[in-house]
Amino acid sequence: MSQQVTDGSYLTPRLEHALVADAMRYGILSCPADASLREAARTMSLHHVHTIVVSDPADGSPVGVVSDRALVDAMLNADGEEPLLRDIADRDFTTVSSGDPLVAAAHSMRNHNIAHLVVRDAQSGRPVGMLSTLDVAGIFAWGEA
Image (cartoon, rainbow, N blue to C red; front, side):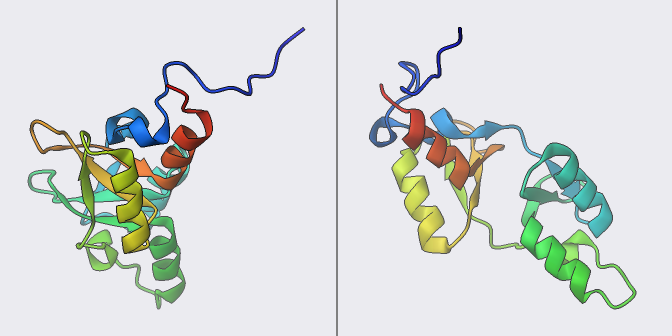
């Protein structure tokens, strides 16, 4: 007989105590800026993510982000010639430190009307992962510590 888990984990902090590092997904899924929409769509669908980082083909540094909605909009607006990711990337993307309070990150998402933030390492400042509104909801749902 299995028991349904309805209580939070003693390992998961409550929302008001959580840091971005407690909720974020480690690792960056990216495509180079000269990639096609189809390549980006394949990456997103293969990994079941809604946003990817667009990277500089020369050094791999992030130059923007592309959401699934922006990808679909570009796909529907393409008139025969498929644009490259550099053409549709949001270059004004928002980042957050892994050491920041999760509530502050959630406020940033709300204030910028976005569902994903690129997470930078608290020490090095290098991109190390992503934070989504669903990640925040998971901490809210299960956090007990």
